[in-house]
Length: 257
Length: 257
Image 1 (tube, rainbow over the protein chains, first blue to last red):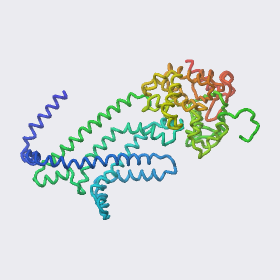
Image 2 (image 1 turned 45 degrees about the vertical axis):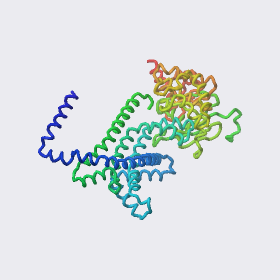
Image 3 (image 1 turned 60 degrees about the horizontal axis):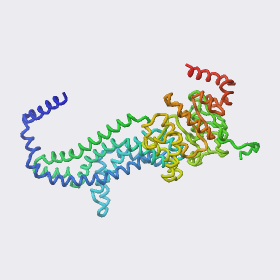
Image 4 (image 1 turned 90 degrees about the vertical axis):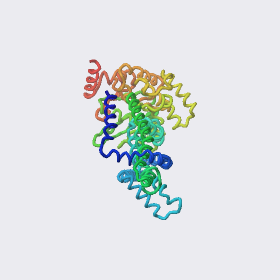
């Protein structure tokens, strides 16, 4: 049944869409084969910059987010200011659109007149991504930490383990395992949002596609760029789904909370 | 040591004096007094909410007390500002919900605290853990994970985990209450074994027959007060207080049905 209905819809799209009155024009400006072949290698090279920004931002995000999550979780009354600061951080950076953070930091900080390489928009654009995403990822970590049953903490502390040992040996290993699927989703969004850095200068995939579009007076480079993004994000999304599925199955079979 | 000088015999192992503990408005322990001698097995009985578990959790410093004193070998351990970790190493506790670490194997559950807290080597701690596991019939489960074990096996592992720290006192908090009836026996056998060794134990339990068999003294708690205590034969057969009679009639009525 699923196969039949999918086939019907597929045929309808392939047959009907080209019958639309404007199809010839759309085909020429979005699906031009010669333009595609022409710009694709350059786009791939530009995509390498996206990969690099992702590669250095992601570990920074995970580390900073973990620190923030731990700060939000401190129980000692003396450290309450730290907790407050962490809460304020997540509120601010989750409440501002990522693109605005990139503008403010990416234009603002190099405007201080710093020397090379400290005035690079690439550096501060990445920094803005790190700051914004850390706020989201910190919330994921925090949810994971809070999902670990209080009894686990009690058991560890009752054996004489310190709160730090309890956190690193008992709570975090369980918390991180639980949030891997959610983290994957955030990393997939990051992979796409890396393109926002182009708005303050660096020529990565989206920016290169923009340039190619203007040069060719044709939108095909955008389609090519979208295909490159999809080639990376679809496998990652499937992997995240698979991890989530496996997780559900496992926790369903687990007797201890 | 306590300044009264009249005590010729050894100090009590554990002593609670006027311990008061409230959760918000609700007073759970009201000027609670209790003495447990070295090598003595004391059972706490009483309705749910009578304060049995809270007594144990306070002794283990998992709950800070509002007022009163708790002595271990004559030293006040509930004084604010004391580092609880070295004290907790001397007091083992086993929980109703086992609280095994689900991400670690049975052997790792048992060796974690000796390694992290006492700084024991991997081989050394594994060797002594294996001795304990073997004694309680769990040797072939050393590499299993908690969710692969029955409830009775998990609870025996939890007891072994507490014993691995060589505690001077064991607190057992309704350790058979979440077990299927046919698994209760194997856990109680472990407690009998500990009594033979002369372990000082404080046991909160709903198993009246077991309390009668194993306890040197039984304490009846009602609304956070120790209402009556005595040898099992005294308390079960000739309860002095009306409340105690009512409670015993109710629970034995339930078990007889």
